[in-house]
Amino acid sequence: MRDIFYYFERDMLRWLRGRFSVVSALVMPAAWLIFVGLALPTTFTENYIDFITPGILVLTMLGASLQGGSLLIFDKILGFLNKFLALPSSRESILLGKILFITIRGLIQATVIMLLALILGASFLNPASLALTYGILAILGVLLSSFSTAIALSLSDHDAYAAFNSMVSMPLFFTSSALMPYAVMPAWLSSIAYWNPVSYAIDAIRALQGGVLAWSRIGALALLSVVVVCISIRQFRKATL
Amino acid sequence: MIPLETHGLTKHYGSLCAVDHLDLSIGNEIFGLLGPNGSGKTTTVLMLTTLLKPTKGSATVFGHDVEREAQEVRNLISYVPQDMAVDIKLTGRENVAFFAKLYGIPRRDETIDRVLWMMDLSERADDLVRTYSGGMRRRLELAQALVHEPKALFLDEPTIGLDVAARKKIWEHIRILKSRGMTVFVTTHYMDEAEHYCDRVAILDHGLVAAVESPSRLKGMLGKDLISARMSGRIGGNLPEGIECLGGKEDGEFVFSSEHASEKVPTLFRWLEEQGAVIHSLSVREPTFDDVFLALVGTGDEATGFDDRKFRTMLRRR
Ligand SMILES: Nc1ncnc2c1ncn2[C@@H]1O[C@H](COP(=O)(O)OP(=O)(O)O)[C@@H](O)[C@H]1O
Ligand SMILES: [Mg+2]
Image (cartoon, rainbow over all chains, first blue to last red; front, side):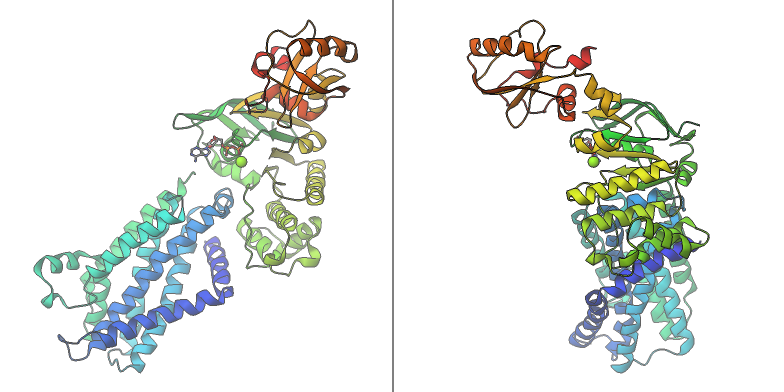
């Protein structure tokens, strides 16, 4: 168990010491919020910032988690993973340490969005729903970082990972309910969007804005996370090169 | 308990046989796996350290099977891979501390200080690894590997890319470890290192072991003296009685062996001239480890003028 923290600590130290990566991680999502939130025409709701903020929060988590898989790719290419796998310490702690780091880093980025949204006039959250929002984002982070790290384990170079990342992240985002409500989507899109796990998180956060706890959506997201984490743990336990 | 044993250890990558029926038995010694690039050294180490599943055969580390008892094996070993993998954004001490934590070392700070001191890194321990030289990074990796006092240490090309002084330093540390009772399994493609520092070496060629012996006995197998010839022109056919060719080196030297080398020089000279070779020099010298390698493995470069496959491998025949 403690090993998870040690792996987390290593990634955190390395991240914090690369100042540029910290700054860019904090600026990029903010730029997204401003461009998407303020630049798009607001035809279907009067307060587009309130509407779009959950989408951007989730987009930030999505980007952070999928990008996080490249941490393992680099560990693999540079030979760190070999060393870790030959240690007596349990192998799933490598995975769980990555999940912890990627998720926490994503939540830090999400905090920037949250603050900025409040400055821009978002009016949607009280403390309780704020905490729940973080909870939902964390579950999404666990799901996606576990997925991306397990995929990274099976890929051999960074190009392959970059290809995977772009193949997955854009479609996941654009077929979700991030940018528009189900009501204005074409029928084919709304049914895809409804089953897209990214929408589970967005819908749940939007429901919180209306004071509703969308248990079925949160439950589905949590269940999926547990399943994906279990599969990933198995992959790591039996990992050979 | 025998530290390290393999039985018909084999690894195929698709149709390529990277390691072919390896049978080794290794005691408390510095055991060198010597071979050119691509001969299967890394593949062997990966199987012994439980990171790669053998296609066939088995291996045990202190009696534990690397496949069935991988966890027990990992408790007993340390592994330093070929790529230099240390975190350059962390200090030397932080790099070692990270491993010490993962190994769950009791009295952590003391141990970290001790291994850093052993590897001559105490003074620079709190500097970022970014500022370390290649040799220091290697020693830092050794320090990481030593925090949990492994019974067997696996080093894959520990001196690759280092300058002569740094290489010497690494090997001196390896020697000290062995004298403290550690079994050291090390791969290298530097022949001089294998010769000077290994108790025994296995010479690996395309996944096959060509010989397992102590370096001095391997040299001894070539006899007292060799004839070295520098010449040009293509030659072939049967060598005179009592002379054998070990092969041609990349630098254009051809090496011949004979029981009475100096007496055979005139005979060889005449024969080479009859063959139409232009002889630049012909001399008698003591065998080197290079010659052992040449005799067992060849240069792998068939472009040299001499058809050495025809004459080669007196050692193999013995
Ligand atoms: N993952 C792999 N897939 C396919 N072939 C491989 C792989 N790893 C190594 N090989 C091949 O196996 C042979 C032995 O490689 P290796 O063990 O790395 O040699 P060495 O460490 O002695 O340089 C080489 O021909 C290499 O190309
Ligand atoms: Mg190698």
